[in-house]
Image (cartoon, rainbow, N blue to C red; front, side, top):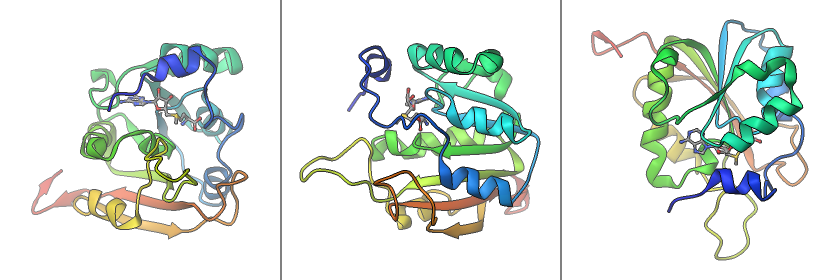
Length: 202
Ligand SMILES: C[S@@+](CC[C@H](N)C(=O)[O-])C[C@H]1O[C@@H](n2cnc3c(N)ncnc32)[C@H](O)[C@@H]1O
């Protein structure tokens, strides 16, 4: 399955966009202050990049959809140079190993399950060892019968398996805050990329 994300922005078919940063992400970051360079993969119109900048991160958004990024620059002109065109699966070399924190919100759920290993490899390329992957994972979206997604459901065991090697869980809960119709369907799981595994740097 191949999804034309830029066409979705060009056609204004952005059903996922709530016009504001993810409430569970804000809730977690405000209570667990951290700092450094933060990346939002699949940033779309950039609301989570704006949140990260507001909270003091050196924030970057990455997306494959030029129209989505143009809309992000219009919405957040002071952050215009923070929105980078690129593919998470083959990220720009300048961004490799550059980030202390990755902020996940509805990027993973945009991907058919077969692409999850590519998502993991992309995160591995971008996140520093010891860095944090702060995720609001869309576990159980409210789909019509027969609709496979996007958003693609991500059962908790699949999330656990994807990051079983090389990451440790530092927070994990069903958030009490959320956008309307997403309550109880998301999970905050924060993963730390471990420094060493099996005697070597991973
Ligand atoms: C469902 S939208 C979510 C956008 C934003 N995170 C939000 O919550 O509003 C998924 C986004 O991921 C982007 N995307 C999909 N595959 C990608 C890839 N391989 N690399 C970078 N961005 C990607 C799409 O262009 C789209 O903007």
